[in-house]
Image (cartoon, rainbow, N blue to C red; front, top):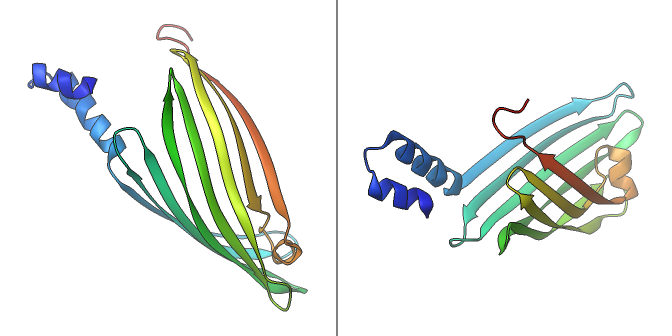
Length: 173
């Protein structure tokens, strides 16, 4: 890599050492965990926990495994449970393009209702057409499991996202 070569040519250069350290930090494995609790004015509530593990699978491939659990309650409805997992990978395609693809499953267990397992999916492509600009388009499918009533309904949500990012050069504000 450029950072390793710069460090090799100038081992005492603080900028080369800093860039090399940043690149190594970005590529090392990462374990993440988060918990959430929320309630609304209709007295719906949920508690959730999500975890993920991300690592490099070679020089050009980055992969993430993720899992999550949610328990939702409502004052006049049965509780609902939602849990599942999956994974996705990110790989460069060349010429500033990156591909993201993943699959998983989410099980919906409403108290006293029909238990369903829904396929989850995500796919996307990002392109960097210029040094300070990028555009990406993505698709995702996931269950709509925010409340006990929604878990019982078994709704799946398909989403499409189109994003543009522009970062002006230094000196432009």
